[in-house]
Amino acid sequence: MALWDAVVRVLIGAILVFLDLEKDGIFEIGFWVGIILILTAIVGFCPLYKIAGISTKCEDEACQS
Image 1 (cartoon, rainbow, N blue to C red):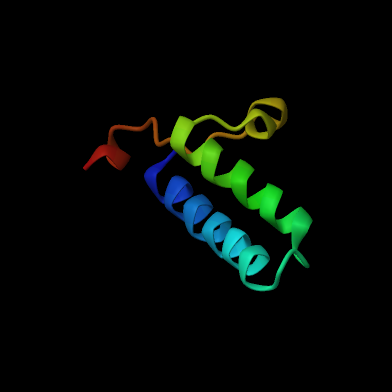
Image 2 (cartoon, helix red, strand yellow):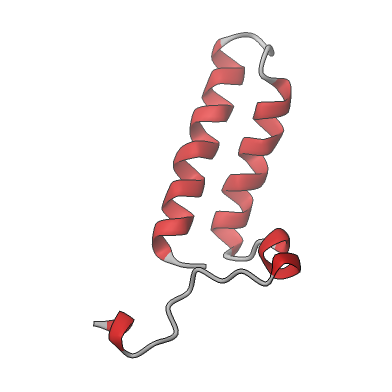
């Protein structure tokens, strides 16, 4: 998982968790989606990416610079 992907996951996950906590449980599904997004960012692995064959990692030498 690329760094930008992990950062976006943490930001969106934190927003969803915050909305649920701030609005007293209205966004219950959003809370769990947010937790999953944050956990996949921390671990660096997304099972849905694996199933779909998607990779955000840059494997070219051109991307390394």
